Image 1 (cartoon, rainbow, N blue to C red):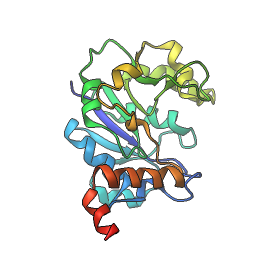
Image 2: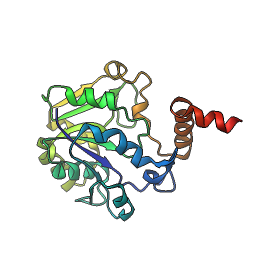
Image 3: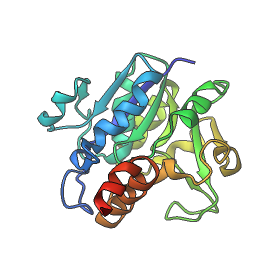
Image 4: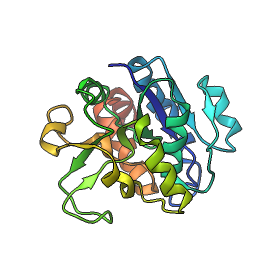
Length: 215
């Protein structure tokens, strides 16, 4: 089913120390790698980022945050206001192993939700017994009022508005059918994570490069 796709690239990359979207990933910027993988899935793909004129060279619309300083929730809000379709898949720009097959499966599910969010059986700072992959999720335009109210109150936690809308979880067991190692959700947002992702891709995707380097 048709949906827009928004890549959020407006973060400060504090843990990386430089713009993570522009990091070289085996010959292409990390952001380009993500865009290349998702372009075939939609006729409406765009980047949400403020003050990033260098992104214009990627031949994808770049939309400024409507509410700068409001974090990823503000990026989701901007994405939903911008999207041409009623549903928008929102992805972070630092997902080097985003999986088109998994995305296709998520997009094909019945649209009986306002938020479709993958979950992993892991405790994080979100609280609870599972992790919501909120920057690898599908949001409907019907979420706009609830998100807007949160933003106006200065409440920027993404899952904070979930009780006000219909949320459909996609459990880890279902995700592993398409991505057994759940690499789709690996964020290359620290130097260590970036180096690990480069090494993993070198072995699984670019073995000839690895062999050449060992000669």
